[in-house]
Image (cartoon, rainbow, N blue to C red):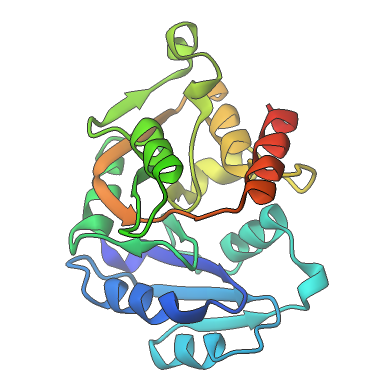
Length: 231
C-alpha cells in the first residue's frame, strides 16, 4: 500500500519519558507514513512541542473533553481525503521492530480485511501478571478471523487493541466509526461491527510493540471490573 495513503494517529496527555522513545521508533520504521497527527488533551509537559519537532500535526482539546471513543473518531475525521488506512498507537506503546508498521499494513493486501492489530510484548520491567497477560492475549501465531469463527472463539473473536491497530478508513465509515457511548472497548465494538458487516479482522504477530502496565492492586481491580461490565 502506498505510504501516501497512511495516517498515524495518537491521542496524548503528558506522555512522559517514553514519548521520545516512541517517536524515535516511528522515525526508524522502514515504512513511512504521509500524515502523523495527535490530539492532545491539555498536556502540561513537553508532549506537544516534542511531537511538533518530530513532524506531527497537533490538535488540542481540554482535558475534560477527552474520551477514548470520541477522540479516536475525531482523529479519523482529521485525516486527509486520500487516507486509506488509519493506524493507531497509544503514547506508551513503543514499536519493537523497524518493520512493525510494514508488517501491520501488509494485512490489508486483500480487500476483505477491514481492520488489523499487532502483537503487544511486555516491557522489560513488567510484573509477572502483566507478562502473562501479554503472552496469553498476544500469541506468536497470526490469524485472520470472520464472523463464522464466533462458534470456536466466543467473544474473543471481537478482541482488538487500539494500542497498535489499523483500520481501513472506508470500512470504518461503513460501520459507523467509533461509538461515543461505551465506557471502554471502542476497538472491540468496531471489531464486532466490522465482522458483522462481512469483513475480516487480522491479528498480525510480526507487527510488534512493547506495551504493558505495572498497575497497583486497586488499579487492576478497577480495570477488570470495567472490562467485565463492558463484556
